[in-house]
Length: 158
Ligand SMILES: [Cu+2]
Image 1: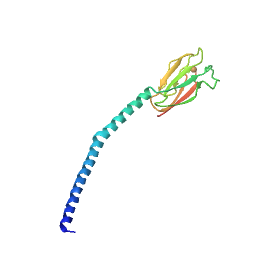
Image 2: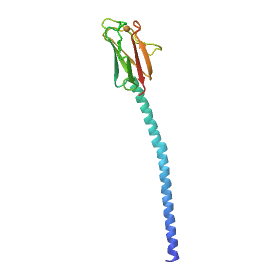
Image 3: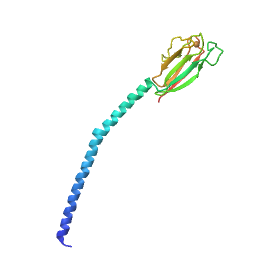
Image 4: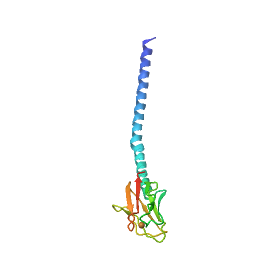
């Protein structure tokens, strides 16, 4: 092998190395630009719209939940009045609760034991009262004219 041929080969491979290095840097820089200015903003925007969507679902959940006021609930000896007595709902799924009064001719309320989350008017047999819970928690309630009527709604975060 002649010396000149070796020198030529070294020159060729160092040029190849330079080209590869240039392409490599270009790909890294391009990747950075893509990540910083295209990928991250699109993720941020997507996250924002999901937040908006979930708060919309809390205000208007796809399903409703039901609690019944049984006939004869005005009788203090009757143990079943609000049914189910312990209702569990999930925010963004079924956090709107409809209480239906099945006690003909009798007025009842749905009233928080403490706080003001549940504050229905008196509503009579055949009528309903609807409330949409907007935050998680345990909400104990009773009926104002018949305080032995008691129930609990547990609102779980979705
Ligand atoms: Cu009542």
